[in-house]
Structure formats: structure tokens, C-alpha cells
Length: 262
Image (cartoon, rainbow, N blue to C red; front, side, top):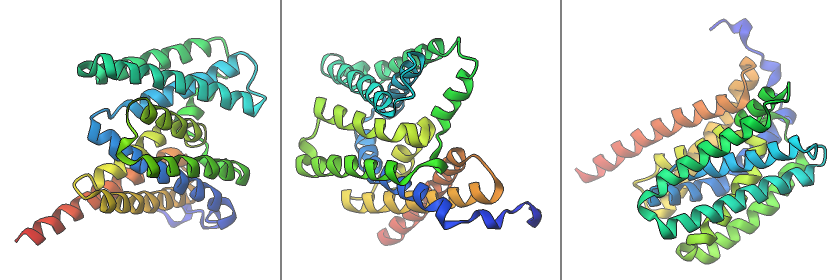
């Protein structure tokens, strides 16, 4: 690659610090939640709940409530929590078709969001931002608010442990997703939940968490650096980095495991 294409001055700690901090906060909750999602076989739950939160944001925008950040957050949280409660009820009644119901919920929520934005000349741009996120532009205030919420959720998850299931699990999941989707976007929410968890899926609970957090932190750092250096969209760059690091770490862990068995 042409060295002239690099923008070394963009590697400014004052620009990248808070996006990286937010990335670590997202990983703090999303890695353990992702491991539970994988174990339960409801992999697309995160996409469905994230899309429901997006639907809430779009509805607030369509009703001209988007100028008030608290109302937008309330709309996103309400949509995500109602959808999570609905899916928890579906799991109790129709567990054999839960994944199909989750996928259907995602499609319906996405279609409703598109219809609500159909008359907005900037609707496509707004939806694209919600999908890919705007992590580079997070503020310290947003990071502190996220830290307060995620600290509470992690405390609850640690206290309840494996007893956190059913409706309780779905509601915690919805709150975590709602807090992250507007900052990092739907794609990065899914990648942060699933890819680090996949890398350490065969490890014990503690080792799997440590592996997932390590893979995620390295990928966020690499993705943000690549985004700054090459002027790439930050969300997609981090998603690609998460995929690459998860693939590499998974291979290393498999080789290490096979070596111990010999």
C-alpha cells in the first residue's frame, strides 16, 4: 500500500481514546451475553433486539422527538424491552420455533423502520448511521452514562449467574443492546456479541470470557487505528478486525488444545 495514503497524524489519542473506552464497555457486557446466546442457540436474538431499538429511534425521529436525547433513548429502550418481553413469551410457548420467531421479528422491525423513514429525504442516511454506528464521535458523557448502566447490568449478571434466564435474561439483554446500538450500530453490536464468543466457545466459562475480552479489545484497537489511518468508516473496520482476530485466536486455541492432548 502507498505510504502516502497513510494519515499518521490521525492516530491522535484524544480522538481515539473515548471510542476505544466505549468499545471496551460494549465488550464488557456483550462477550458474556454472547456466550449465553451461543449456548442457547438463539444467535440472531441480538440482531432482532438491536433492530427493535433502532425502530424506537426511528419512531422518535418520525415523531420529531429526536431533538431530545432522553426521549429518543426512552423510545429505543421501550421498543427493545417490549420486543424482548414478547420473545421471552414466545420461548415459553413455542421453544421449538424460537429462532424462526426471532428472525421474523427482525425482518418486521426492519421493514417498519424503512416505512417510517420512507418520506424523509435523509432517511437512508439516518438508517445507515444506525446500522454502521458513529463510534468515532462518542463523548465522555456518553461513555460515563454507558459505564453506569453496564456496571449495574454486570452486577446483576454476576449476582444471578445461571439463574438469570427467561424474561430476566431477555430484559437485561435488551437494556445492554439499547445502550450500545445507537453508539456503535447494529453491525458492530452483532459482531461484538458473537465473534469474540465464537473464538473461545470451547473454553471454560472464565477462560472463554478472558479470551473473548482480549480478542475484542485487540480488534477494537486495530479497527479504530485502521479507520483513522486510512479514513475508513470505523464501524465496518472494527467488524472486519473482530472477524480476523476471532478467526486467528480460534485457530491458535485449537492448535494449543490439540498440542495438550498429545
